[in-house]
Length: 64
Figure (spheres, rainbow, N blue to C red):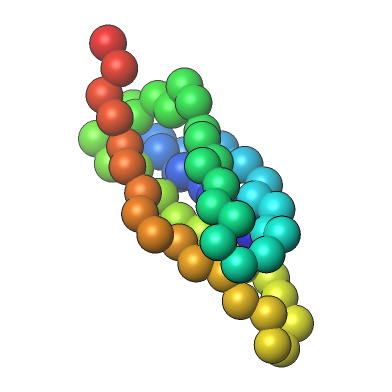
């Protein structure tokens, strides 16, 4: 799995390892520059049949 943020033409990513039920991760992408007023946050998943994963929530915070 990979978390991505696409903002102003630049795509930033962080890989997310899955290692079992209820082993929650907190992947973070820092220093996202929103240059055109839009940002797409998403998750890319490549998996075989029978595999699973959860994304509980995503947040985008303004840091000044």
